[in-house]
Length: 432
Image 1 (cartoon, rainbow, N blue to C red):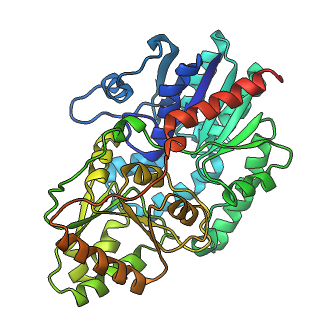
Image 2: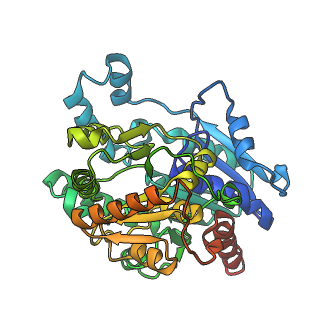
């Protein structure tokens, strides 16, 4: 079987999105599936090559190398991007914001305005000379669904739509999508979404009900499959035991913070804890935080800011080591947020105690309870009380790590989840 995967983010870019596509690239050949990924041509840092980064991440993999291929399409900067490059981030701010919003419409109407269109053209070229059994598009950006839908019709190749987020039904959208402009854009996107998903063979998503139920409702009659993000098992195969060299109680948060996540409930809890434990040796480390949130966290409170540390994104294998070395892992959510953040799988695999702030009353709470992986904290007072308890334990255990009791989480490995996708594709191949 040969499949063509459209993925905007892919290594050497380090992100949760690129890890999903890369895991399929890595593990699907173990199921006798040949994988070609068409992605953006991402720059490489520190003198490495793209091939070197991918090879390093593949590690010792038994599947034949000829079952994997990456095609990298150059990004074509639009007017907004060119303004940013030439004038910097401090000039033409309003104009760039207006252009960003405009592109959200017109990129769907014409390839001329679509900065990512070279991915479509590269895939089109491949399909013109090679036979593929399936196209799989993983979004966002969800314009990849447009590419897959058009290519499916042109070449009579079935395609599957993989949602890493729920496009027009985002969890928590009522908290940050209340303006008229956002409502108009969402109405437009719903029409686009239904138009292009119409000829998809099936739909997949990353989180269980009620998250999954939104897609079932939006696309009646379509099979909606659950394929978790998971974790790379080889990076967690040798859990750290015994002594931890942390000179402070170390809490780690990995990735982006969104408006619907209760980051400031956590900070308020830290502040209350410091008021009750003046001079406490506590450190909160953020890896790969979005740039717009750094100043918000730094400027929230002067005393709390002294305990915050920020690092850029790091490769997933390095992040795994950091997570396993932490005292606590921070997971941010909020009531009614029905998503399953990809970091939760790495957190579970790291077997460090997780603090969920605030309770989502959904899949994250269920995961923490099922795997006895930490505590659910509903407000700043509970955060403060939890941190005081953990800090006292930290002082009393003579810097020795304390893991968490957990049942087998192997089901959540990316290798296993790639097998779920492989099973779906092979099952549908007998019905087409």
